[in-house]
Image (cartoon, rainbow, N blue to C red; front, side):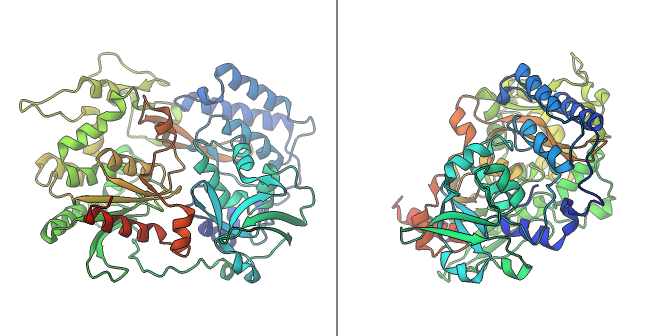
Length: 553
């Protein structure tokens, strides 16, 4: 599930029950063992044939196949229900250790009666705090930290979660706890075998005043969409439309001066993303249709022009809800703020630090990219690639570090192929007219654990350029995999995704490759100071910006 925040997940289940698996005509019927074995072997083939490296995080190839045969031997002779089968598959997929390789199919749940902890949580530091209580009488617990559930500390639950889903760092576990794991009984029970009486749940909360309170609530608690009203912020921020992004100048706290504000909630709805989908055969739009979508190139061009005209000193780049999409928007932004030379240099840093980017060309990959063929990939290559190979061409070209007659780094030709698919941007890139047109002195990037996939790519690119990160680290590791392909098991219909590419941003720094560090983390005390406002990161960014202007930081 790729939702952005807890309230959206729960509302999604409530308003669209078809997403839950509770409407099977006869969910208690066991599926035959031979049918399930066939699906397990199909899944193993998908992981081995499509993923760049399904082995390393799980202990190697032998360990992978040991888990495979343990899974096969665990299927009873009389078969299993689909929910029981999902319970077997989740740890097997999780052992790949990659959040982009996962199962979509949900447990059979009752959407409006989740049956777990009666709260929506959010993440602060390495903890969870109460964001939306299900019960009106629990409003006084708003802002309280979760300490334990059924006597099991939250840190223990985080450690256990790695056996159930692909965890790249602790923030991913915390994010998933906010989304479904703690609220839905099937998921909480899977995480908490000590929980025997599911008619009630006992947990501990640390109040903002510091005292720890033990709470017991009878279950289940029925929900309505009205129940899940998020707290209101004391500031109003502009919201993007279908494009997923907007550029504006704001003064939400009435400070008397406007601040440049770029908000990117997702990177799926802008014109250049659609152009690239058309180029590889994943979508079909006419030139006239493409022109109706908002262009990141055109909007960013106007944005840097306006900032230069206003002599803007600070820009806030709000990526707090950005769960990803097409990462090319990051390159477009860097082009306008920092220029071609910086863009090229930044893009090379992964390769020159012992990492880089590569793609695995599997049958599934070509199925999802019908306009890309081996023949087109192998054109002008000395050594042709085969199905199943990993393409390291971008790394090889980065390491060459070719320069033009003026001594400037040349853009990687493999990366240029990608730029060419984004027709609107490529025209600007070729001209260089607005390369590095204007960059404010202070570039502050707002992050949460929901800043992931291509959202993390944007944060990481800005970080490399010297931007200041504010908030909470991403749930995705900078050294990870991506470019997902979707799969479906032919007998049970269980579906999910598998990564097809790797991105190693910090080949020589494993800890930074696990968690991208935030310069100014939002602490619990700072969050409490801002009265747990949903836009606390924005308040904090303004505080940091003012300090930077005074030279206090």
